[in-house]
Image: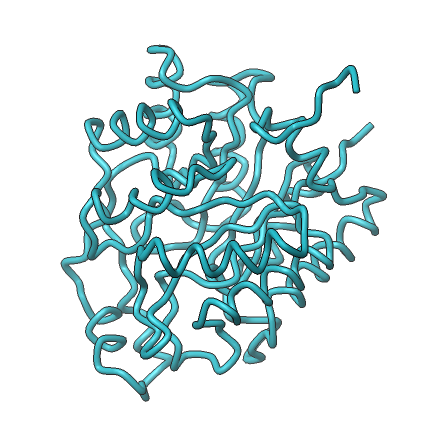
Length: 307
């Protein structure tokens, strides 16, 4: 029998820029409200970035995260996942500060250094409110840096405070990196593996790409992992449907895709969660609530099984 699907929602992030969609939340209040709407729709985890309220620039400002969390935690029992990815333009110290100071149940962790090719987006988008947006997208020298030393440092610091990880794997090499840290005992199962497909610099979003990532992870991790899939751009719902069909989990949200169909901007991340719920229902699968997600991922806030 298939388990309920764990749905993660990422309502805003470092890739897309405010001018590309009027629906992208920017202020702490907007991000919090988008997260709450996604949780109400069935997301058990919200993956959080923060932005400068003035121009939407990605910021790892602890104060902004505190504002977001104050609203969410007052109104919902959703699992909080704070990024350690931030933006490729940030130092590692900048990227990990919110996770260190706020000690969430879950934090994202990119499992390797990689090229980050955003410049093809300029073929579709031409007008921007803020010059940083065009510069950000046009950069063909953009590298996201997470060396073995960086990853080891993040694992040690965050694990000591009880934070577990959403391991973001953009290619098979990232799965092998994760297996390396598992072998060394620096990570503990069950591993929450977020397979990221469709970004230039990582693996593609073809069904064979997805199945190759799944086969490799099954071989490396056996039954000690939870599989989730993140499809960038137009691939979002298509690869989420494939993952749900194969018994996996899914991540959606405006961080990963601005779209709700060909040429149609999604008016919210909630709309995308609704899409996943519809697919899950057609497959006779429910959506995991936050309590179930905590149990399956062995998060700090999980209830005692004997309760």
